[in-house]
Each structure stands twice: as structure tokens, then as C-alpha cells.
Amino acid sequence: MKFFSSLALLVSAVAANPILRTRDTPKDLFHLKTTGADNSAHNDLYVYGYHTGAGFNDAVLTSDVGTASPAFLNGTNVQFSLDTPFPWGLVMRPQNNYGAWEPVEINTGYGNSDFSINGDSLEWSEQQGFGGWLVCDWYHNAPQLFYLWKYLQPTIPSSCSKVQLNVEPVS
Image (cartoon, rainbow, N blue to C red):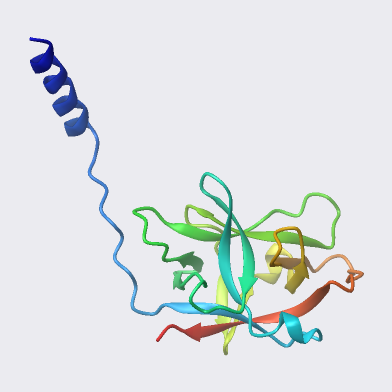
């Protein structure tokens, strides 16, 4: 009898949960690649998510395109195809500490909107405070992506470089 009640409980629990379907992969995938840095070590690097907690990643960079996280534009949101049933979006952390730059993250959800591709470069809305991209040799043992807050004049440390973030189609 215990077996049947356990089986009935299992069947009802499974039936109550929706079945998650893996999202279809878009056809227009691209990698985000750095260019234009004064420090040549910060050029030709690809964005990927560095796991920092459940559903949270810092946007860091690697020279290995195989490690790069493929992205796509969903309206004005940049999302990443990470082979999960839920979306991963590019998150521009809010400016909240009077700092001249803020970290960029790849987290579950749709992320921030107001991204656009201008020529080959990814940009965020100036109305949101976007002043450009910054790469810094930071604490993940990998260069990390930040965005510049356009309302403050940054003093860029020697371990950082202003960069362009170009869109490179995935072949």
C-alpha cells in the first residue's frame, strides 16, 4: 500500500509541474568581441559568463572563441544561448556608488533593454547613462567587462582599457 501511495504522490507531483521546453536557438547568433584597446592584451577577447551564484554571472573575457557565450538580439535585449530552458540576458548593473564604471553581468532573465548594434558595435542607451565599454584585469583571473557611466569623468587604472564591443557572427 505504501508503494501505491508513494507512486500516486509522485505522479501527481509530476503532473502538477509544467514541462519545460528548451528555447529554440535563434539563427542570428553572434559573439561579442573587444577591439580598439590601447592595451593589446584587451583586444580580440570574447565575452562569456563567469558563474558567481545561482543564476548570476559576471561578464568576463577570453581569447578562446570556443569558450565564448553566443548571443543574439531579442528586440532591444541582448540574450545568450546557453542551452537552458530559460533566458539569460545582459545586465548593466545600476550606477549606485558614485563610481565612474559598473560591472556587466549575464544573468537569468531578459536583462536590460535599449541595446542596439551601430555598424558592428554593440551599444547601450545614452539615456541610461552609457558612456562606453571598459575591460579591466580584475579578480576572476580573467579580464572583466564594465560599462562607463557617462556622467562622471573616469580615471582609468593602468589595468583597464576602453574598448569597442563588436558583434562577430557565429559561423
